[in-house]
Image (tube, rainbow, N blue to C red):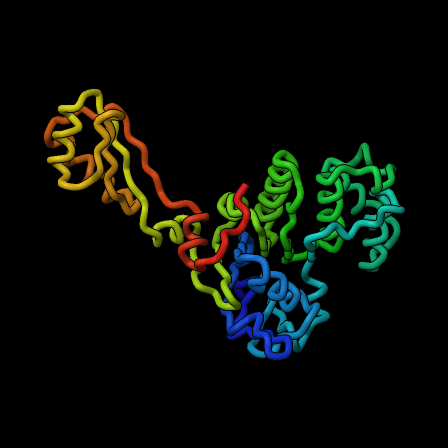
Length: 312
């Protein structure tokens, strides 16, 4: 069995003369969270729609759960779940009825459907609200129900297209915990998000999409190390130690009022140890230190040159 849950090679999509995806390559290992970042209009949702068989690609190839998206779309659909930007719940039904509707669509028997609905209501902390109309649910409850409906068919791969947009911080973190639990159970998550903190928290790997092209891929830490601006800030008890450290290191920006020295740093443990060894070799007393690395805001701006996506 392949270790990749999702692959794409040279994937292209155009609408008339407008190129939305310009030959992107992806490889998402099973049982991981992969996050696709990009500004509005970068092609994130188009990518999800192609991989989930909602629209066809103009060129290139893609597989999901081992099935070719173009040649075997029914097998792909049987293996995936999709949670879009807006909840797909039925406000006229209650939570239990929404789940039973999905069970019917997945051709589960009545007994199996009721069992699965009960499991998901418990898993998503919706037991008390199960018989209440969805129109009375909060935004976080609606999102949890939406994801629960996606899981009725026990998908191998779940596409989450900006799943926490509009949620308050508590509800967003609750959704993060659910995602972690799903991945721990072997599910693969393909996440698009407008929240850089979300990608930083959840994703095993991140790709940055800009004007239809993947401009960078890697872990959050790998992407951050590509961007200049990382530094170590040393704080001293007196000005003599500050001056001695500046002389020993031969670089950095000192602040005599704050008694700090800011030294450029690439974020690696090796370079941090070398820096501390040089200071310690001169018997310089360091009161405290902190390591600062560029965040995903800095990465996004440096790689795309566009207005950054929302970071909350």
